[in-house]
Structures are given as C-alpha cells and as structure tokens.
Image 1 (tube, helix red, strand yellow):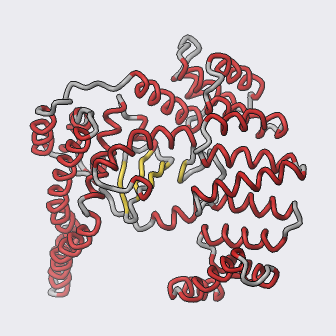
Image 2: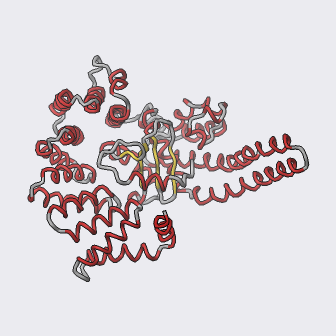
Image 3: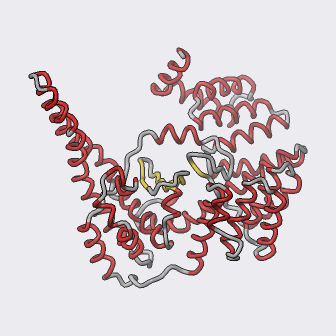
Length: 453
C-alpha cells in the first residue's frame, strides 16, 4: 500500500476529462467502472463500509499496482487488471486494499513514517559528524545507508499491516461466498519478487512487501474456507476478458492490438478489441462495420451502443450518434457517463429542443457526480446556448471549483451573484462558493501565489 500525496494534484489535473476519457492519468469508462463496482461493492459491504462512500479510480499505467488513499479512495492501475488471470485474482487484490481501508492503516501509517524517520535522521547525523571530523568518504557511506535504514524500519511496520490486510481479504471473500484463492494464486505467481532488488520489482510489490510467511499464512487461512473451491462464474470470466480487450484496444497502439487479437481469433473480446483499434487508427468505416456486427449479436449491450455512438460523434455525425447514445442510457440509466455522452451529442446538434433535453440529463449526471467538471462545463455551454448567462456563469464557477481553479471559480461565482435573483437556490450556491473560498486559508494562500505569479 502506498500513501500518495501527489495524487491530489493528479486528480485536479485529470478532473476535466470527457466521458470515456483514455488520456494519461485517470481513465473514465462506463463499462470498466461498472465491472469494477460489481466486483468490489459486495466486498466493501462485507468490510462494513458504506458502499457509496468508497470511490474507485482507474489509472492509465501499465505497471502493476493498486493502493488506497484517505477519503476511502481506491486506485487500480490498468496494468493490474491486465495481469489478472481470473476475476477472482482481481477481487482478491480489491479485498486486500479494502482491508487497509477498513482497518484504518492509513491513519496509523503516519506514525510508522515518523518512526522510520527517526533512525534515518540519526544515521544521517552520524554521517555528517564523520564528514566534519575529517572522514568524508566514511560520512558519505553512512549517509547513503540512511534511506535504507528508514525504509527497513517502515517496512517492518508495513509487513504487519500487509499480513492483516491479507487475513481481512480472506474474511471478506468468504463473507461474500467467494474463494480467497485468487489473492493466493496472485501472490504465488509473483513469489519471485521477494528476492529481487527494489529496482526490478513491480511497483505493487515495492508498496506491498511480499514474503513467504505471508503467503503461507494466507494459504492456511483460505484453504480451510467452505468456499475455497468456488470458481469464477462464466459471466465474470467473460466480463474480465471484455474489459481487458477494451483497455488494450484503447491504450495500446493499433498494431499491437491487431497482433494480440489476430483475425483468426473470432471471439467476442477479440472482435471488440479490433473494432476499438480500428477506431483509434482512424479507420472509421471498418470500425463502424465491426461494431455493427457486434450489435447484430447483442443489440441490448449498452456498451456496444455507446461505442457505435462514440465513433459516429467523433467523426462529426452527432445527429446519427443520438439513437445509439439514447439506447445506451435506456439500457443502463444509472450510468452517469453514458448519460453524459448523450448530453454531449445533444448539445452538438445545437437545436433548442435537444439542448433543453441535455440540460435535464446533465442535472441527473451532477446529482450522481457533483464534482464532475466536464459535466459542469457541458452544462455551462448548454445554458449559454439557451441565453441563460447567469446560470452559465454559475456552472463555470462549479467547473472551476471542481478542478481546483479557485481564482476562476471565485471570479465567475461573483459574476453570477450580480445577475441571479437574490435568495434563489442558485444565488445561494454562488454565495456558498465565494464564502468557502474566502474562509479557507489554504485556498487563499494558493490564490495569493497565483496573483504574485
């Protein structure tokens, strides 16, 4: 498990991403998010967490890693999804990270870091004294060991937490009627990592120090479970294959996808990956033909409808994309991202009726994802097209606030306050934004720095 302060910055940079964004950083995709939530929500509930309070994020990173941060945020690299042989392995990793959250390891890790810093600082102090005493080589050697001393102290604490998270994961899997064998096989596949140097280890095993003792303890725990022999369902196996095909199709160069999924492979995931790769390669006609074939087989697949609409929209045919985006929303109305795609296409047609419908959809999106800055941006565009400039200014303030651009958020909130009828809910919201920004010393400090720059 890794504590990543820099992720606050990363999230701020990546918030302004359209639906189904595959840019570097945070990946947003309705199908993958739905699959991960289907697998993780029962585990969160078994751990005693409020499912709606846990946020899962997918990072566009081929390295194998997963970690949690404060605020009940779980991050999965695309690499760890691609490395999962079976859904049960990925579920095991999710259950392990859930164990860290449920057991409060993040709050205790601060103490561990402080304890690790003490011997490191003392060792560095000895090195400085040696250098001052006339032994610079000895001083340099001692100081070079300082970081190693600190890391050893920290991981001595962390191994206890890792073992506890393993046992918690086994408990959660058993509570949901699933086998804990997936986490065990995942560890066994990468057992060799414990003998490699830090530079050669996967990031996951740098942050989750592996040991034979941990593997043996987990083996003893899961092998006695009533559900040890329970296998993944055909539905889950297919879902993982489709998710992996989609990640490869969007994130790998098209030729790599074609090599991994040659034409001789006529399975649904392979055809899905090739259709996406052709879209990425700007072979729009071929992509539409291939997605059309998929739709012939599964007309009620919301994600095939979504992809067909996406290809049409991105090739400048927003009007033709509408039926497919509408169908996707009909099939999965709870998906904020599918509804956001539909809203984007409706606004692009630039007709009064469609823009009015888009506003309704965007409001539903923002009920589910209040901090979705792209949805706020689209709403500001829609209000502007309707001539509702005060509401457009407020939506821009909301978008800026969600992105952490407080200077811009304050500016547009103040403009909205001047135009909105006093006492209305919108006026109060604009007033709240200005008051929160004015009252937060950290935000004021950021704004002062921006003014100086």
